[in-house]
Length: 286
Ligand code: NAD
Image (cartoon, rainbow, N blue to C red):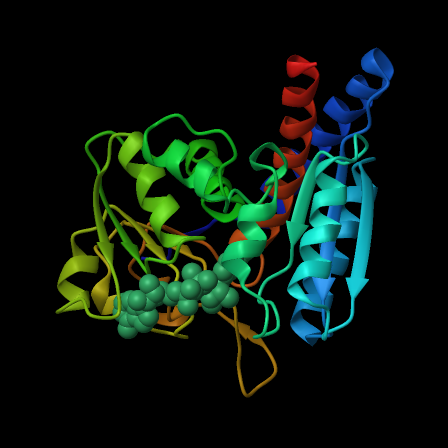
């Protein structure tokens, strides 16, 4: 058996076109252009690539975007002052601080300084709390994009066994909440989980987000399962690899996301969706 490949690039293209249409309508009807500010502190090479891609995607969809590069020795107070100014800027509907931050800065304090309605990453404690209590407002881009993928593929979630491997605040935990709210029975695994294979083999839907290349192999997958590989790991060969061993998994799964070309493009598309929705909510509040 060979799994169907889930084409995240194609799904993301279609979502981005939807955002571009909705943004054009917002501009024509209300004179509002959704605006995203991206703050990058320091010169981490991977972060540079990520922010460039985010800003480019914004421009292609007709969104207003501002990239602010701050030096690596920026103080906490200086960064909080920039966030405060952006919180009050009416042309900015979304603020994203690229993580990781240099070690002298507290990502916790920085995220909490962003106005929750402009927190387009969905990491603010108030957005996390709203999601947890079933009143999602801004949902973190990666799990939100995965839900869109599962919906587009008509994957039945009510009563399904869903296993999420990796319990970070930005991927695993919100993913588990969204699957739970969609009616799945959810198991959330972490690095201390005993017999990961046994947990994974129960999954009708398996989401893997650990940063451990090739952690989940084909023999850990239930035949026919939908496998979503969130991992992005640069191998010694210079290529990107997922957290799922693709060669063995593709023989067992029913459908699987490739790396690259699976979850990654959807994450960026959802950032545009979140920025658009933040601008729409802003109008509704005005
Ligand atoms: P993280 O390091 O914050 O969290 C990793 C989680 O995996 C932890 O909960 C840890 O307990 C768990 N884990 C580690 N080893 C494990 C093991 N052997 N068995 C079970 N669980 C284990 O990572 P993160 O920020 O959630 O990112 C995870 C991966 O997803 C990384 O490769 C990252 O680059 C990638 N990522 C991709 C996108 C995208 O858009 N495709 C977005 C965010 C993160």
